[in-house]
Length: 501
Image 1 (cartoon, one colour):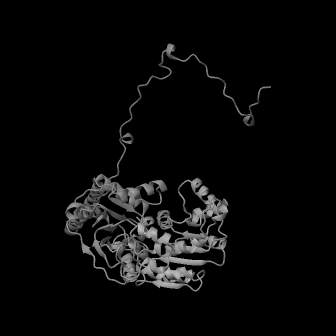
Image 2 (cartoon, rainbow, N blue to C red):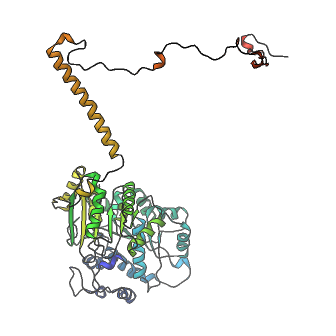
Image 3 (cartoon, rainbow, N blue to C red):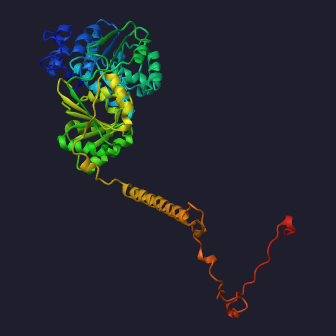
């Protein structure tokens, strides 16, 4: 299922009914590919971006997740590159003319699927390169010649170093999820890639969120960009119902199980801030009979792609993920997402809940909130300009509160012992003080202090001496005496001994 599925097949989302893809002057081959997928009307971001991109102007496009940003830049790119399309077998006739950069492997693979679907009836070639998989097939595809490359920055630089890709003829640069590209440590790699590109080129940036810092940084390489914002910046989708439940931190795992069971959810993404937290939650869900799988950076690319495919096919009901899965993933009609942890970066909240309520459908975004998340919730409220009222999760306390967790019993015993010791000290102290107040001379101990502490004494040092019954050398029979005479002890030369000559 493609990201462009957010473009309604028969009716536009908030777009004028008269606007159709054919109104943009797209080639028959592209319109045919769109028709194959049932797309007729563009979404608002597509309706505004496609005409501007076709003019060769730099664009900074911001729209909510699930509104079809991928088609907003890929369709005009294919249209612009059709002038260079050919069926020649020579790699030299198929140089890299468009480069699309994404922050994650999953997003790169998805964008590549969309681009290939839209260009299926054209001679244009497209391929995707990302880390975590064998570089051999990617190298073969690049050497055979491709016009469109979708890549993650690290793996693209690997190919540049191995001289398997040449970017000297690239005409269009796209940064998908641009805010993440620029603020997640990709900046040095991006700068190296930009230095390899021709100075005269078209630059496109698309994302759901643009902070003022990101806009300022983007202006350093965008040339007079046109900013497209089809909705208020950093806004959340209106068709997503946002719910926040206040629970104790240690009860969050039980809360996830409770929500899944009570709502009868058969397809849900649960977001965790940490890899180990995602794995632990997935294991607990599996132990409770829920078909769950974890996806995070410590998983191999094959494992991540397999888990994602099983989730899409319904073989896995719950996908527990870190933010590696928050950007760009398009799951058809995903009914619900759960924030097991509130994200450290408030902008990630917008991307996470954007996994549901796509293509005009409704969805629920449930977040679990504890006292330690207060600052994170304030950041989310500031970014989205809305106030949240945490609710109580009904029916959780009777189940989660009585569940004994590893170490809980021993911890309770330790606390009880500590309380008993302190209680005994208090009682003895009170007894000493009371007795001292009544008859100070009757006690040898100080007034107000308890009884002296008794040290443990090893009985070995207090018992009387007992002679050993072991036979001495004088009392030992002759037959038991050793017949081996001890040798003469050697003395070091420095101590008077002399080596034999």
